Amino acid sequence: MSSDWVEFWDSKNPLYVDERHEAAHFRRIAEDIRSYAPEGGNGVMLDYGCGEALSASLVADKVGRLILCEPAPNVRGMLAGRYAGNPKIVVRKPDDIKIMAAESVDTIVMHSVAQYVSPQELDSLFRLFRKLLKPGGLFVLGDVIPRKVSALTDAMALLRFGSEEGFYWQALKGLVRTRFSNYWQLRKSLGLERYEEGEITAKLEAAGFTVQRARSNIGHNAKRMTFLAHAR
Image (cartoon, rainbow, N blue to C red):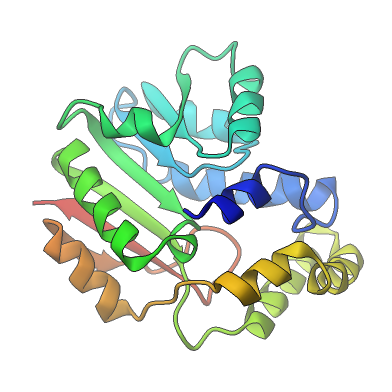
């Protein structure tokens, strides 16, 4: 991920319109991610690029160990403090993940990260995850943006989510605020990586996975894609 994006996520940003939105966002993601927890309740799960992960305890309840990996140092520090009392949760930086033992993880989730890294970086991450996963382990790639999905589509998804969770009017105001924010400036200057289903499938297969698209995306945006990749 570019240093500009890491710096953006490491500072207070305008993407969450209020505390209700932020809490609902992370709760929905955690609820979806926990459905992919390895069976038995004692497996190891890695959440790569987890962000503030406000509801990570919901996921940790379903696993033996949850590794939260986050590149933004300030966010990483907040995570370490928030979950210091939970023995199941550990917080790591990306360089720590690179030196983990091969075949040491049961499930890896990377949600809403693919759009912020280059295609070459994405290939490298796929190869790393294949090395880390146990045979038959699962890699869940969430929130991939198809080429045809526009900013307007994303905005409509947010408004629907706001209506469901009780922050519709705040979401409407927040969209206006975001339009004039540094997020939008970064999105225009750096762009977001977009992929069709076949492109992601080919990349994952080249890294050593068997792949299928999930019936629903992780999180609130149904127009984006989640993929389930099993280590061959």
